[in-house]
Length: 108
Image (cartoon, rainbow, N blue to C red; front, side, top):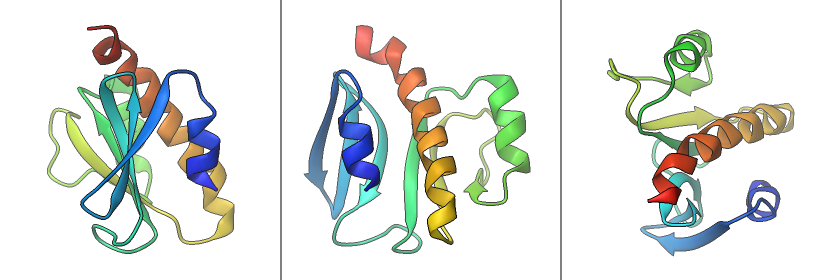
């Protein structure tokens, strides 16, 4: 369901690699959805920021479903855990944030 939503966005392509569906905005990767395996759990998705805007990073640090791990700069891969169907709306919101952040990388 997430993949169908995100693939409908402009300039998005999806490529299968390493058990995931990697999401690209033109040439810039911005996320990954589990296909045949998960990174931490089967219900976690990955988001890529390069870097995450400071205000968004502060928000991310307060989001219990989003693992900011040891990220000090807000740069790199983050995982978002979906615990229920109700989390899909928020997952799409975070994927959109990563998609918008990939706009700079996609323009290169």
